[in-house]
Image (cartoon, rainbow, N blue to C red):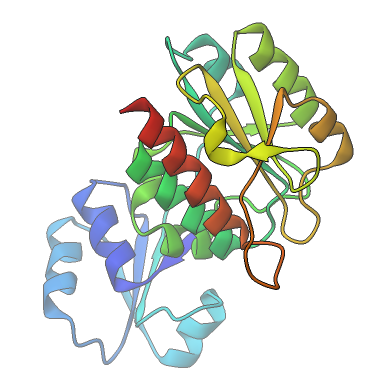
Length: 234
């Protein structure tokens, strides 16, 4: 997998992540980062801007790194290590990598135990997610599953309460109890939760809207829900 950006590079080096190869702009001006790469014994290739642009689709800032693909946790690993009072965020087919990266960053700062994503029709960890999450990926546990509703049923059997987010037939988000084992579900951009997922929720929460627009960006909604859980658990 290719990742890019100066901050991403520094964080990977500081976290001692294995970097297979670094590609730097042949006019690269950041001697500190170059020294860090060399001290970490990373093989460096120097390229012109056109060559770097072909490797990634984004503002690489003259730095592209090749690393191993992200290693997801399995559903089994999560279910066997939930702990006493787990806090889980399940994403119902989020497709925008910027939203996903922002949610990962929020989950890391809030101490979320697991982020769960479906394998199909959902964005995975890619270079854009890596850059948007700004180093948070090394400190979160992301679980990739094959079937959301089957995972929900397994979580319920483990005593986890499922809280979906939707405007209809719902309670105000801060009126629910999140001090118990909780899984928050954030629906996809534009479509929200699927009907079957909604039916499988124990509770449905809504964030009040006071303007003319009746929905929030998925990462913003996730942030509000996540920090209400944090507030109640203090």
